[in-house]
Image (cartoon, rainbow, N blue to C red; front, side, top):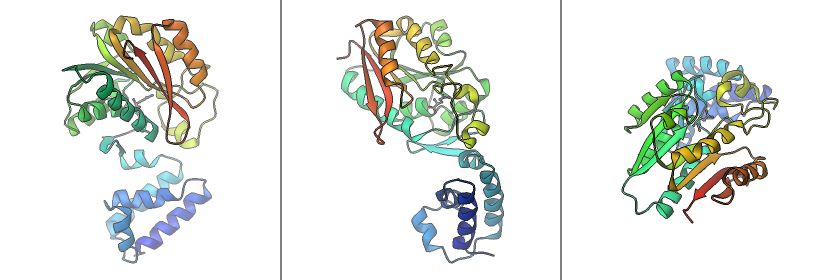
Amino acid sequence: MPSYQQAIRVASKRMEEKGISSQTAMLYMSELAQMESYNLYMEYQNEVPEELLKRYEEGVERILNHEPMEYVLGYSWFYGYKFIVNSDVLIPRPETEELVANILADIDEYFADEKEIQCADIGTGSGDIAIALAAEEKKVHMTATDISESAIKVAQRNAEENGVKIDFLVGNMAEPLIEKGLKLDILVCNPPYIPVDEQLEESVRDYEPHVALFGGSDGLQYYREVFKAAPLLLKEKSMMAFEIGYNQKEALLKEVEAFFKGKAKGEVLKDINGKNRMLFVYFNCK
Ligand code: GLN
């Protein structure tokens, strides 16, 4: 049996040859072996148990075909919580964790006096945003929608596994929220925002759900849909929070102005990589 070091070396070399980050070989082993990398290093010269090696090698073959590691594992981590993922849902991204962190900071700043905060997440996918917000902030009453019934099934399981209660609704964008007559303090949405003709990495293009990725010819179609629905859904004092494409800041701030004409304050925040990644729209908050 090879040692951990040998098994990881072989896998990382093969991944590199295919243009896949060689760190994935290490990460995948630490997830399968359920060891943090520092523990894995201590085991480095030891033999990999047979059963583990078999699972590792099978998974590595799938990863070499550009299948994302998270789908191979069947789960992903987001904001410290574990989320089941499969090809029905987008894999949660680190940028989206920053969106959640900023919403939580805004709750403390603008909604500190509210006993209950009505919040909705449109296009919830795996449920990552909705579940992390509800788990972190007990005052939040969360409703989450998705057009994909199979995505909602995944999100429901994730809510159960993480011990949070969320109202899930299947339907297009804001429609189920409007039908329910909800009045929201906070509307969150990480819509599909990639322009249809943009080139994507193989792992994303071939494995992740296209319904969760593409946002029309300029990528902005779903923001416009949400902006249009906003007056029907939002309380007088309220806010919206969106993840955005790194190059969509100017276009989206223009849309905010065109839709809300000075009634709203639009702000774009950068992520830790210095990219414009989050749009916040405030109504009578500041
Ligand atoms: N809300 C999910 C996420 O942020 C899914 C988003 C989507 O499918 N576009 O990861």
